Every structure is written in C-alpha cells, then in structure tokens.
Image 1: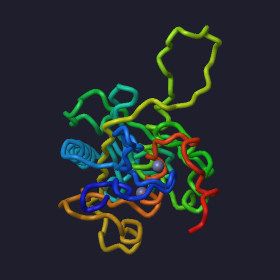
Image 2: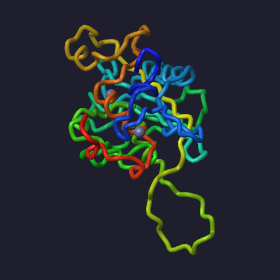
Image 3: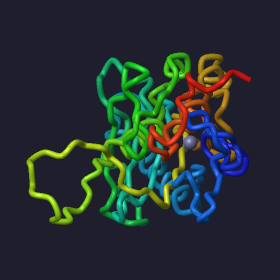
Image 4: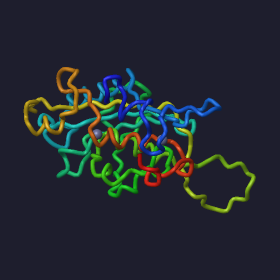
Length: 261
Ligand SMILES: [Zn+2]
Ligand SMILES: [Zn+2]
C-alpha cells in the first residue's frame, strides 16, 4: 500500500496492459478503466482489525503455534454486475507443511460490517503467466518475468477471486434461441472495488529477525501489537495494474506489438 492508501499504484499511472493512463476518460465522459485504482477505506481497515483481534484472541483457530506466525490478511468489497461481494483471504506462507490456510470463517465472528455476507477464500494462483485473468475475466497479459515475482499475497488472492467470480453471465434477452452453453467471456461491469491488507505478527516473533525483515521489508508498522499495515510487495506492485485493467483485449494493441520507444 502507498501512503495515500492505494494498492498497486495510482489512477494517474500508465496501465502496463493497455498502455493508457488508468484514469483516461473517453470523449463521452466514461473512464476506460472501471477500477482506475485500488483504495482502502476506514470500514475495511476496521474489518481487518477485527479479524486480527480475533486471531490474537483464539489460538485454537490456528493450525500451528500462533505466537510464532506472521502472515497477511486481506479484505475486499466489490460490486460485480450489480451484486455486492465481500471476500476475506490470507497470504500463503509459513503454514505450507500443514496445507492449511491461516484464515478460517471463525476468525470473522467479530466483523460487524456487512455481517454474515463475507466469504473466506483462498483461490489457487495460476502457475503459468498466461493463466491470469483481469477482474473482468479477460486475459491479463502478464509477462513471464512479472509472473515469476507474484507471491500468493492476500491482495493477489482477492483479485483472483474477483476474476473467478466474474463469470460473465449476461441476462438472457430472449432474442436468440437458447443454444446451450454460452462461451464464458466474463465481462460483467465492476464498481466499488476496495481493499485493505493487514499483517498478523505473533507475539513471539522477533521483529528484528532478519528473515522477517527480509520478507516484511515493505510492511509498514503503523499500529501497535501484532497488526501492521502492509505495503504492496514488488510482485503486487507490478501485477495489480494488469489485474485491474478492465479493457477488452481487442480494444488496444498487445504490449508485445507496440513500437519500442
Ligand atoms: Zn504482495
Ligand atoms: Zn488498462
């Protein structure tokens, strides 16, 4: 996260996927990007804080010694095709050997913001650069070198979940006979996307530990105790702009075919 509360850059940055400024406005007044930037807000920060409190309180909800754990949690809200969605996730490290994710539905007991509507989700992330989709379901066109830097951060999992949730089922207009399965193009409009990430740091974690410092070098400790707000890591900074570009792939020149400057 930047100091202004945005994840993966700002609306004035150029989009690496389609080449236009993210806040570029068409002559008809429409933004070319439905989500020009990913911002956090008070309610989501509060929600993340309540999850962290619950994590601290109940060690039995952990697969393994919580006092020695550190990981990121993230919460996201979005409106996909007019429907509000609320997703919570955690980052993928430190409990690999148990094949369990840190965050469980029980950790959301204290959440009051849109209570009961939250889904805890840990989608698999693609193992190939060409497996990534934008939040609208288009090919994300993430280059292989950027793909290699992507970590299973909470932010990445949440945006992946948005892409997987945008199945593009347009309402049936009844104009054409139903020919069975329609191709899944995934292009329901997306609005109101907001996110907050926070870091859980167990009480026995030595914050001077070089391993933590290495992994957490971008985390920004503004809060006391075991919750640190999170800065986007390099992989997130580079990949989030591709994931949030909402333009159809045939609307612009593919990055590989653009003239080199
Ligand atoms: Zn990250
Ligand atoms: Zn774009």
